[in-house]
Image (cartoon, rainbow, N blue to C red; front, side, top):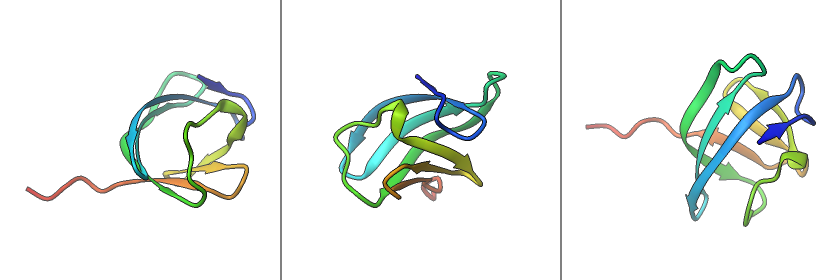
Length: 78
């Protein structure tokens, strides 16, 4: 989905989620991958993420209008 509300705009693919752990893929407007994988929701619980909620992508964190953020999880240690 295109998130035009986000500063400089981003493309976002939202996969499934389990509790506060969401699967996301994020690209810039040129189609370059910014991040992919598991993101931890910090803030208000969400049943879904819609483009109008996305405010910005900054320093590896997806910011939503209500102050909620999605932070990429570190890969699990082997």
